[in-house]
Image (cartoon, rainbow, N blue to C red; front, side, top):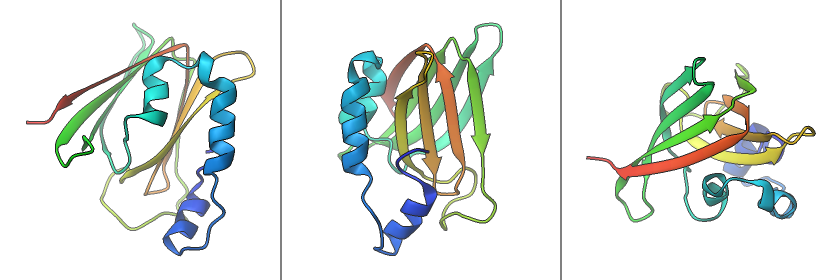
Amino acid sequence: MKFFTIDWWIGLQDFDNDDPLPRFRKHLETIRERLPSGLLALQETVSLHDANLRLIDYSAQENSLILILDGVDGTGGLRQFTLRYYEVASFRTSADSERGLPGPYGYGDLGYDEPDITPDGKIEHRLLFSSGIELQMIFRNFELEWKDAT
């Protein structure tokens, strides 16, 4: 993560932090026109905060990656979000066994995500979970879908 790091998040829990939001918003303005609408929506209108990752599915045949997350709709209702990455150039997950926040098993709660543009013009999406696990995807296109959970 470039802006919303686990060290910052842990500091936030202790009320000792340097807010990265102004730097992130400034960065977002410089790449806004190059982001797919669904990825931009995750920054402006759709919140995945506290969502739980249920599935990671990579298809070599289709060169696509799907993430399914259980989250909320902003009014107390439950939603299932599907993030689809196309023309995947890279997928990486990493964890720091020394740092993390208490919470649920697995990846934990999704805290923050950051879109970016790589030097060669691909799109990058980074996600940080309360467990300290980070996901990083580099790709060409993206779709966001959701449905109310039943």
